[in-house]
Structures are given as structure tokens and as C-alpha cells.
Amino acid sequence: MNTNTETKPYPRHIAIILDGNGRFAKKHGLLRQQGHKAGADNVEAVGDLFIEKGIPYMTVYAFSTENWKRSEDEVSYLMALMKRYLTKNKVDALRKGIRIRVIGDRSRLSRDLQELIVSMEEDTKDMKNLNLTFAINYGGRDEIRRAVSKMISDGVKADQVDEALISSYLDTSDLPDPDLLIRTSGEERISNFLLWQIAYAEMYFTDKLWPEFDEAELDQALASFQKRDRRFGGRKEE
Ligand code: IPE
Ligand code: IPE
Ligand code: MG
Image (tube, rainbow, N blue to C red; front, top):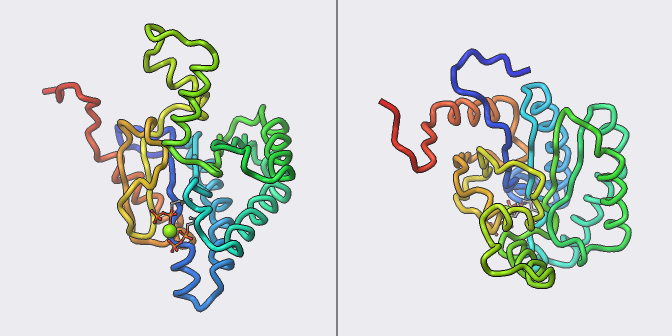
């Protein structure tokens, strides 16, 4: 439940660029892979906080279209980690009421991973406590490219193209736009995440590394959001 007494509501949808797993590993003398494992565990922990606080949408950037440039070892570890996450977390997702979705171009993922994604999405589709979306092989530009290509192959006419139609062709067609975008680890850039959808999202950057992002950090991000004056291009009320 959202028990805050502030007048401004919590965000409904928070998108997170979970960055800093590698630096976390280095800081603690661990392998990079252990940093990624700590990061995956933290997605679970932060998901629980969203449920506790009544924030219904959480979208996390797990693997970008540019992350294929990393070493083969790191890429295959990340793929295995995502597979393990989706296998191991099904029972928990159903118990906690979490609906899992995946956005991004799955055609480049292994057959196994694609099948796990389909079955996770199908099995959790009636869950209502939290909409947890993973961006895997996701790039905002690539998503727009795929949307345009599909519109053309569907024979959409020039005068039919409006913003709602474009939104409906994106991977996020059944999600509200994010209200708040959080990036951990001190980097202040978007790195090709949700380019279309964050048009009016509030931005929150923290130096904390993703595996260190805890309830106190989330509360700070929420408090910061509640102080913002969202105008969406309109005039400030007197
Ligand atoms: C974020 O952690 C997770 C992914 C991009 C998969 P990084 O691996 O980018 O961590 P840093 O930026 O090297 O610390
Ligand atoms: C963004 O992090 C991608 C994910 C969190 C999955 P990166 O660490 O890949 O981004 P850059 O390279 O610092 O922009
Ligand atoms: Mg990084």
C-alpha cells in the first residue's frame, strides 16, 4: 500500500537502467559475473519493495542491443543468468502476483530463452500486484525501426500515422509510459533505453551501484519525484 501522506502521488511506472554491476564486483574483489548475479538478486529485492509500496510497473534494462559488444564470456554468462532467473522465479512470481513481460528483439536470443520467455509471459499473465518488464536485446532505436518496418508491412497509410498508432506498434504497447527513470552508478545518460516512452519521464540519477540500490535509495528517488512539478508543456497553475 502507498501509505505516504504527501499530496503528490508516487509514480505508477518506474523504468530502471541498472548499471554498475561490474564496478560493484571490482569494489568487492569479485568476478564481473558475481556482480551480475548480485544485480539479478537485487531485481528481486527491489521488485518486492515495489509491491510493498504499491508501485504497479517496474521496467528494467537487462541487456541492450549494444551489450553484444562485450566479451563472449560475459555475454554468455548474462544469457545463462537470464535463463536461470526465468526458470527459478516462476513459482515466486505466481506466489507474489508478478506479471512478467519481456521487451526487445527476441529473435536473436537462443531458442531456449525465447521459449522460457513465452511460457513465463503466458503463465503470469493474470498476475496483478506488479508488472515487471525486462528489456532484453532491447534498444530504443531498434524498437522504433522494428515498429516502422511492421507498419510498412501492414500497409499503414501515411495519413493514418499518429502518436497513438506509433505507440501501439512499440514493444511497450500495453504499458503506460514511465513516470520516473532511475539510473544507478553515476552515469547520466539514457544508453538507448525507451527513447519514445520517456518523453516526459522525470530523471533520477544516483551514484549507488545497482547491487547496492536498496529501500533507502528507492525512498530517496520517490521523495525526489514527489517534489517535482510535472507540467507536460502546460502552464504552471497559480
Ligand atoms: C549493468 O552493469 C548490467 C548490464 C549492462 C548487463 P555493467 O556490467 O554495465 O556494470 P559497469 O558499468 O561495468 O560497472
Ligand atoms: C546500459 O548500461 C545497458 C543496461 C543497463 C542493460 P551500459 O553499461 O551498457 O551502458 P553504457 O555503455 O555505460 O552507456
Ligand atoms: Mg555499465
